[in-house]
Length: 220
Length: 141
Picture 1 (tube, one colour):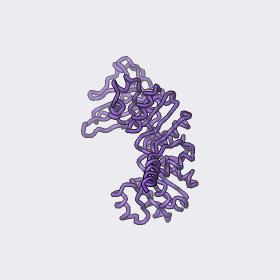
Picture 2 (picture 1 turned 60 degrees about the vertical axis):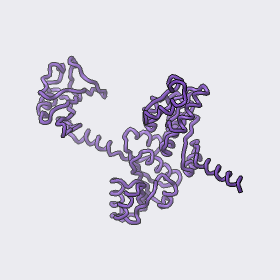
Picture 3 (picture 1 turned 90 degrees about the vertical axis):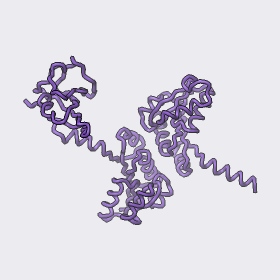
Picture 4 (picture 1 turned 90 degrees about the horizontal axis):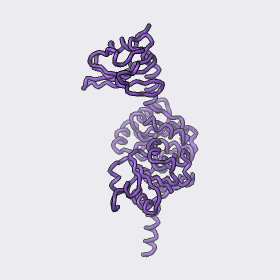
């Protein structure tokens, strides 16, 4: 199969290498001169220098005979355009586009650029599905500052369930910063009642995780 | 008429000022807060006091377009410095917000020509310059 890959970042370069190893013919297009020269040392003629949103660059890469075009540059608008031109101008049956900013996903959908791959979405989905529903999810670890933000789902049997925030004896060095309930988030007040099923965001000093689990995520 | 201009560079800000002077409602969206100075330039009072709107945000983000008033726009002008951004947001304005008058500035003649064939109205300053050079040379020779 002949594959044209736009964008020689980590994704594009590794993809090119893997496809070549599997016996496919690949042309990788990279627009940064220095990056191109680095890749060229390994991939040689399989990489070309140029802006993959320019038609003459795509044509020089032989896009007309490509069976698959993969757009994995760091710019979503470039990826959209490359796939659009590949499909509508050059009649390439298959395109794959990378979404850098998940918020731009709807633009890809709107302009019929599919399928798309978003690393951020994939990791988010993994977090949602793979992390056990009991216990903590680390959202942010500030090692240097010795501070963490965790998310925890409140279980029915947890001491905190049904209590006002003011009545929950949080470990010294921790604080509830927001509550996610039925898809909406808010900053709780002292008289907010924490309910089972709430997702609570807590900022804490490292090492206090067990105390937080003991308050919010206790199995009956 | 409500004119939404995305990209307040030399072209976008000049078009914004002249549209406002002609009595139209004008809203400008640009990612750079400092581009506001170009809108103020030459005006007796500030851009807002003269009646203009200005929003800081990325043209490619639908929320920013909404904040800048795209739901009410009669005319949409894509004049950011990026050809690809202009072509994407012009199509968003057409397909998602059903704006009838959508114009995108595209520097690359090849993309400008092809997208024009696909129904996106494009203005290509490069093509204009080429033909002006050509006719200037013809005049001399």
